[in-house]
Image (cartoon, rainbow, N blue to C red; front, top):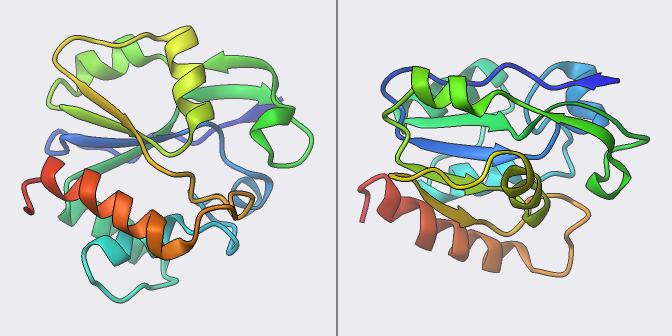
Length: 164
C-alpha cells in the first residue's frame, strides 16, 4: 500500500492544487512532482515568469509566496508504477477535517481529470469553493504541447490568486 504525503498548506493559502497520488519517483525522493518528466514545477514557475529551481525547499517557499497549497486526493492506494489507471484499493484523504482546519481555501484546481474523478467519487463538491481542472502536467500527457498547457494554467490560476 502506497501512502501519500502530508499537505503543503498553512492558514494563509486560498488556492489548493490537488493531484491524485504521488508517482514512484516522487515517493522515492519524498517530493511532490519529483519526476523530472513531470512538467508541474515548470508550469507553475512559468505562470509567474520566475526562474525554475531544482531546490525543493525553494519550491516550497515559492508555493508559500503565492499562497498555493498542494495535496493529493488519495491518502493510500495500491499501484504498480505511476499511472493513475493502475490505482487499486484507494482510500481518500480526510477532506472534511482538512476544510475545517483550512476554511480559507476558496479555489481547488485538479492537476488531472483522474484527480477530479476520485475527488467527486469520495468527497463531492463543497459549497463556497470553486473547482476547475488543469491539463495534466504528467509526462504521460504528451498530446498537448507545453506552451498550450502553460497558457491554460495561466488563464485559470492567475485570476484565482488576483494576479490579473
